[in-house]
Length: 310
Ligand SMILES: *[C@@H]1O[C@H](CO)[C@@H](O)[C@H](O)[C@H]1NC(C)=O
Image 1: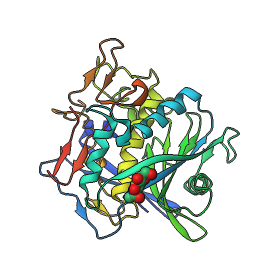
Image 2 (image 1 turned 180 degrees about the horizontal axis):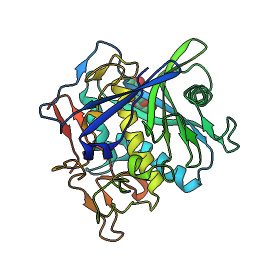
Image 3 (image 1 turned 90 degrees about the vertical axis):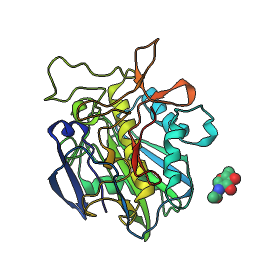
């Protein structure tokens, strides 16, 4: 289907590129764009969106510590309105997806599988990702999403070259289901996939990265990319939902707003964020268990703008 690349740092170069996986091959697509003009229009392509109660089944591939898994799982839990946090919160961020026709999507975590033995090795292809997605799903699933997370020591085709994660569709016993994959970029390319908690390799000299709330840059990068992809999954699960541009290299709910985390953002500057006075960490959304997350702007179909939390 239509997986995506998420490289905010490329905005520094005023360059955007997208990667599309078609069957087992992918074609990098590059195009020159300037900072998005407002209003920004994502077209609806007459296909299904995901709405209602959805279950996210997770496969953790490789080495994830319990605290890493907790930070990421807490983000998913935080999306739910039942987290009852005052805005700006992960739930208030997610509420923008309900502005897309059909109402709200409420995500809860289903089963979790730990693959600590790297069953498919430490170098994965697109085909192995789909295999892992099927294993994460555990069988034909409806109203559910399979999520695969790979640890920092796992190489994945295209990872850090053209993508930080992808979403697409796979089948189990003929039943199509959406999946997403996000890699931990802490070692391989933090500047690409964990910006602005890590500096781009070719960033401006003397700049300092933002302080990560969890202290784990890889985890914060996973949350940013998971947020991006899960918004893409519910608003464009099978390539016929909301996006701008060609279906093979779409700009979706969050990728259309790449590099924007707060008001006043410009290429290389994430925009206004909040700073935790105790830890010095930057964030823009509260989560359960006292978590703080930095969540990317999302296109709001009601205002035709990239909505920011602060
Ligand atoms: C979602 O689940 C909640 C709680 O189990 C239930 O009250 C609600 O009706 C469900 N919504 C849909 C759209 O199925």
